[in-house]
Amino acid sequence: ATTEGALIASMNRGCKLLQGGVNVHVEDVGMTRAPLIGCESIEAAREFREWLLTNTNVIKVLFEETSQHSTLQSVTAHQCGRDIHLKFRAITDDAMGMNMVTKGCTAVLIHIKKYFPKIKIISLSGNYCTDKKVAATNWITGRGKLVIAEAKLQPMDIQKILGCTGKDLVEINVKKNLVGSAFAGAFGSFNAQASNVVAGLYAAMGQDLGQIGTSSTCIVQIEWNSDDSLSASVTMPNVEVGVVGGGTDLPSQSEALKIAQVESSMDLASLVGGGVLAGELSLLGSLCRGDLMDAHLKLNRKNV
Image: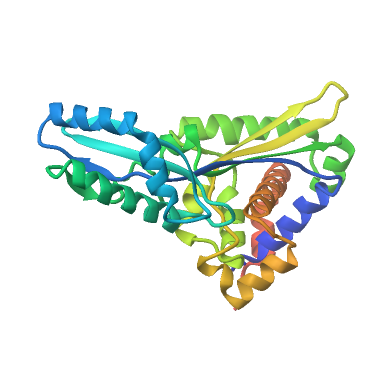
């Protein structure tokens, strides 16, 4: 789903280049929620934190009683002054899982409050999750699905389909996506247009549109192989997707999932990875050729 005419043509070209196949690795790293707890002093906060870390078995039981589809992976507690930032991480099957994890956290906090009546639950979400905001914690430890997609490209196909050389592709990726992004102080944005593809797929397939920015964190690598072919890959540590709940039940979105033969959240995450790789290669090729503006004028402008 997009309002940008040139993007559809660009994606078709990228997919054509990848018709030899894409290898995709998907790991479910778990959905997170991070409640914020206030204590009366730093000593009280330290004692509260120690209790939490020594009673994880109790917390796990309370959390998992709220849903048969959630499995608590870990609970961490980080002290900042008199406050404790908790982080619950759970596997949520085929749901994106935010509501499921939040429900589990709520049950745990109700129980904890009985033992520590003086604590204050400042917020069910203290922004350490981190949801709908690009953050280092998600880039490092992941949130949702870690997706790595890779394809082997032949120089002849690159020249024929993208109209540039393999050398051009390697150079522009390093100087634009890696060096240029670093020079700009970009964070998790070592790519050309990952968010374009994520936005299109999320709108079409009933995902949470507020997570487009976070799910688009991505680094692109294009390297030479020993046989003179190229390896192109995208690594996305924070793909937040689900195939049950939310907008996935809407008629058009449900139909889109069926057409794409998406049966699980892992399938959808794979589709995101492959789609982003196609979009990256196509745009980089266009930039190498220098015809990006021509394509937009031809496909995305209204004649008046």
